[in-house]
Length: 333
Image (cartoon, rainbow, N blue to C red):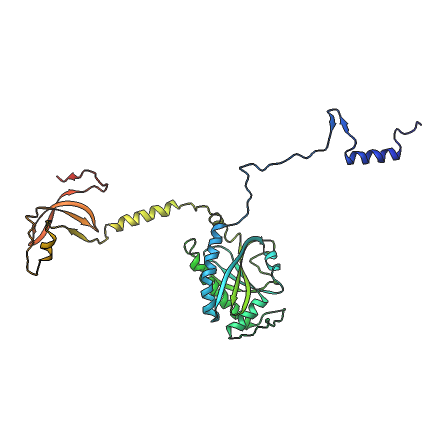
């Protein structure tokens, strides 16, 4: 047997040279060299950030109005600020809170499904302390295994205040009638949501008295699925059937509307001195008012002749005026 073409040392040296680039690699297409191809993002490329600008605007309005609700509930100066709006899983949202959390579940009717308000144990303890008039600066002392019925009741009251503001702020977008469905521990199992379900996590800071805590509103993506295009700033599709019904209703009722009808009896010219010299009983001559313009809510609608009908002053219609300014009026026949 002949000796091998390459010894082990030569093989090692060759592999080292190839990996370092010191040795060219040849193929049937000629020498090949390792290279990096630059990549440029095209002008039409877009990165989807799930920023939800419309939802961000709703959250800022919610924070402003929730401040007053918190003051009324806790009877102390309160300020609510929006911290962030982000997509994550339900498990990730719960894990972002230190220790045990109390979850207030609610039904945002008429949307299908549930949504949640998450309060940390410290937030619940401080809410309870402030609700009952406590002013201690010490952190709330709380057993991490459970929440007492009193703590759950105060947290539920806070959740109802949150829902009242949500219904008010979301009214232009969707008329919600949310209601509390129950409370859960973050460490427990909630039948209406799985840990891997995607949620939109809206986090807020709550400053009340000398305390500062945070709370989260968790909107499962499946619950608000039909509103996602609106959250992203897109217009919702118009409902043609509803628009048609609205038009028919408007047209049927517009003829029953009551408007104020007025007409100028006549015109004359006077000097300012003559006007200043007028006294009760003086007569202003306006000539023979034969024709005048009749207006409905200050909009000229027709011209007519003045006369008397059934013993009352009246106007006989001559021309209906066109709605477009300057358009010729058609004389009635």
